Length: 534
Image (cartoon, rainbow, N blue to C red; front, side):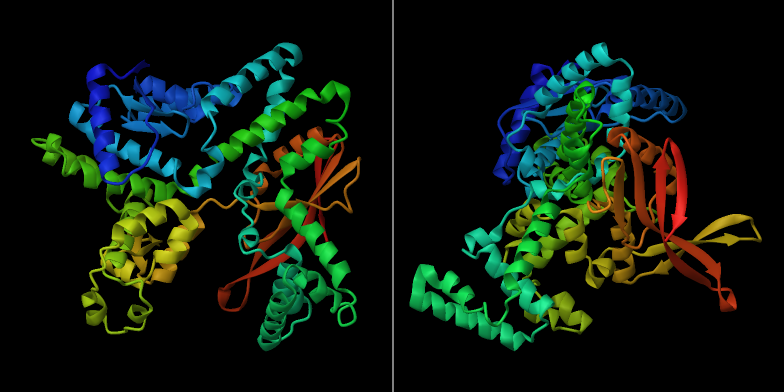
């Protein structure tokens, strides 16, 4: 691994200048390295962070990667990591013209990392430096505690997908609107859900409160609620209960709960384990936004490398080569999902909608297909809209906001199904649906969505950790359940119970599948697992 030579670095700096002129925004400093395929294989298990702590699973992944590479040689073009300064890696086999295209792709990624609000908790961090400090601490602990360090890392990493990532992004908009939590609860929860009053009464109460503001100013809220005591004597008690529950929900994640409350970890001889849990949790939260913005991030980078490189004079003589490479990266997969392709086309689609003024409500009322196609208000606001997209959206919001029937028809997308061809003994793929709802559901189902696990504090004690899984239509992966609960039993120092829902399939009339939902509890005690139906 070595830094780019001066010639390549000058090319990168020129690409930065052109990218900034197009509107991309990123820091001045960046580090670029040339790496071999062997380097890529060895860094990939560590998320391309050279300073990330070593862990026995890394070695297993490296050996697996080497085996896969021998069977299926590949030539990865680049990798970029969100650090300060940003670090990117380029294959040493890339020709200069290809690196120019890749530089634009990487710069768009850096722009995304440094401006998308899902990454805001990383904007001021030097993660590479922090990872190095963590690595040194873990090496020190290994020298003191031996192999137990890797067991604790493994147990912690088994639940690092359910840290409370969104709490890092929490912003109280009511502060800007000068609305207290008590008012928010009264108008949005108490009246509408606790009392189930009609909309007209809610609006009347809002008008009444506005009248108090005009007549009493800063004292409006206290006078307003003092008059409610006779009408709703239970209000204060319900508000206190709701606010405590709401605050706990914002703070909670399982790793933090175990770290703060485990009687086993609280023992003096085990306190060192807490440091590992903090490292694992912080590392997971640092990388959490990347998996939640994969489609938009890759689409954004692909959109800009295409738009910037095709007008760059240095493409001259390499147009056909570029077309071939770009097609491999951004072509739509008829089976499966290519995030580069779908993300890039969604960015282009949003730009087109905005340029033509199709976000106007009047456009949504047009039902004639030809009139919808011809609609064009020439607003030229598309570039502003996609930068807003880059700043505020994740994959989930992107897909659910902009995938509609027009998008499906424009790019001739469809959902594929497969069936057994008994005559030829093969699997046939066929067009199952061209409806945008089915296509949207297919992509949404492929998105990262970890389970929601809470602690039932009423059933939890020093001897038992009681967890509840909020069932959202999908079962847990039961193949891994015993290993995860065994790790949790170790970290808690007592038995662990997990309440969850199982789906059981049975044949009904006309040979149709019927589904039964059973609430069950899995108990891990003394490294043995037991299942009990509720």
